[in-house]
Length: 160
Ligand SMILES: [Ca+2]
Ligand SMILES: [Ca+2]
Image 1 (cartoon, rainbow, N blue to C red):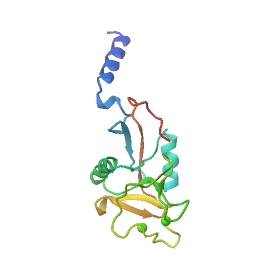
Image 2 (image 1 turned 120 degrees about the horizontal axis):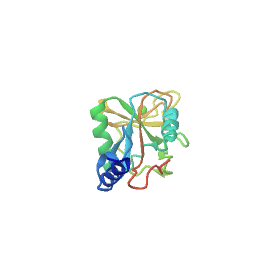
Image 3 (image 1 turned 120 degrees about the vertical axis):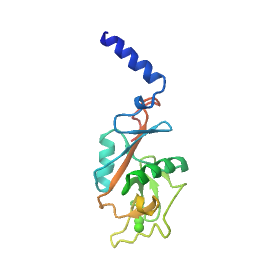
Image 4 (image 1 turned 60 degrees about the horizontal axis):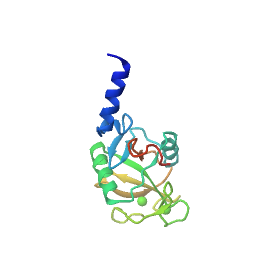
């Protein structure tokens, strides 16, 4: 059979909403978005750059639904993951720089954020070992990270 036939088959498969066609390989689809859970560890700044390199951003966890999805994945993988959240610009004023929003949904661990470290803790990570709740950590710590973007079907690669 011709290449054109295969091409038509793949296109019709994707148009029917098959999940594998909605995100790039290695990314997970959820509610019109694609999420990448890294294995490698980077500082918050390096992680943010790496997401942008892949035409995405660090994940903005601004709804209960996104938090539940991300938490389930992190519980499965284990470890600590950077998100987009930071109070680096104004201590105590947490925001999602990729979307320009202040926090209106939070899931802090008891006693967090505490800006505990002598050099401050200005970046938001989710820790599997504490029921995947939120911690402010030192931004230079090397941890895993989550990128996200709009799915191909929903317009594709526009976040960040
Ligand atoms: Ca802080
Ligand atoms: Ca802390």
